[in-house]
Image 1: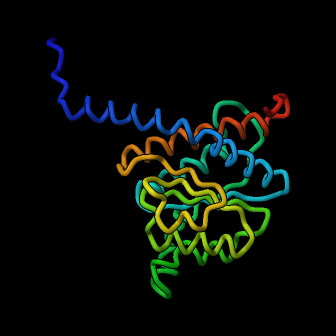
Image 2: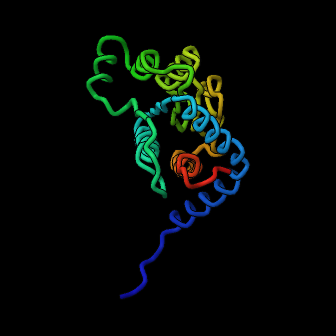
Length: 198
């Protein structure tokens, strides 16, 4: 069977992925800060709340799964909730208030000072993301922004900003996956009683 022809756009996108990944290395200290913030929250009995729109909602749910389940090693489960996975609550808020409020109202009801609220957004400009981060700050929770480009208005409400240096949605989401995996690995090490956290 002959080798399939690889289209130029595919090679170009892979080259772009590599270039963004190299630039994102500068974010590793901030990734560590995000892991430390979560570990501190869990040490105080806190909960992680995640959310996003579209593909970013899937990333938020992915993060929650790694935290409640585990990443690469068996360890105790940790509390995390994805706010975009309850259609009854979301449609209730959207219908009775506005779609801009679907995450903020949940954050207002649930988030406390010991908690971490993590938003996933490629633009940082979605009103429901910005208002939810502002609500988390108002409640005293620690905020983590998985963003891209210039961070958008959401950046103003982020205690820890993981802003991928790219304007391209797929490249941003690819780096978000790497970052949530790196954070999950550090949390696994901390939550595993047989492993020293470093």
